[in-house]
Image (tube, rainbow, N blue to C red):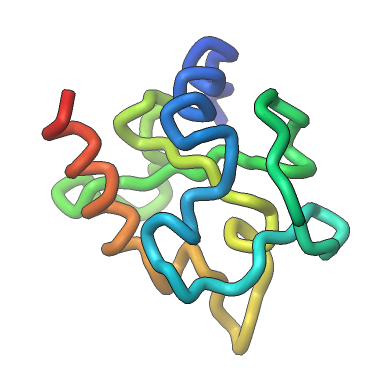
Length: 113
């Protein structure tokens, strides 16, 4: 596994407002939760670590390949709370169900640069 460089993590966190993007890309998403399952009621304007915000690697549709993770760069990373990144509801997590929406969000970010 390739580590995400700290400067890339900080860039992605700043770009994503230091918080989970799920409410931005899907207005009716479930509550954001920390790694212990507690609802996150406010987002501090600094990096509190992966217990609050985690980096999610998203491959673009033309890059799909089994067993290969997306590169650790800002074009392939989004900030998600542990609840939206890993938590499973009815056999599927939020990230898996919304990959196309996240891809579209990342493409829109690329087009504005």
